Length: 140
Image: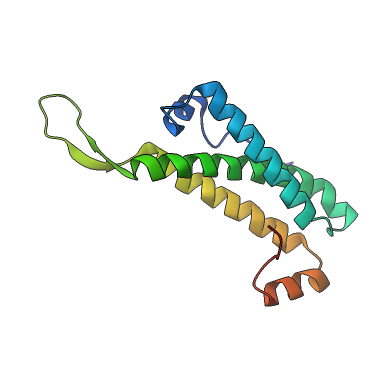
């Protein structure tokens, strides 16, 4: 068996996602986005062979969680930018640094893309080849 799944965004870092929104509102938005993405991915990968579908179900659930969090992080970064002025103390000159949400977004998006690649690789060749030739899925 592989390593157990772990949270990509630790609970402590969730507060940075949207400082102007309440935690409950943010989590509700993430849940709605996650459900929508889960349904979308299930439709996309419905042609997986039955033996692979059981494995894919967990990957689809994790990909949906990652995508929902990426969307929320992206909104935060669009509002406040990827960089911020930061100072260790009032006595030191502030300097620009990458926002923690930016690093979290990059890691979360990379994990999402990795799972999608694994799911794509699970598709039977007769289904995967036409999709690749057309440049991807034609599903919204």
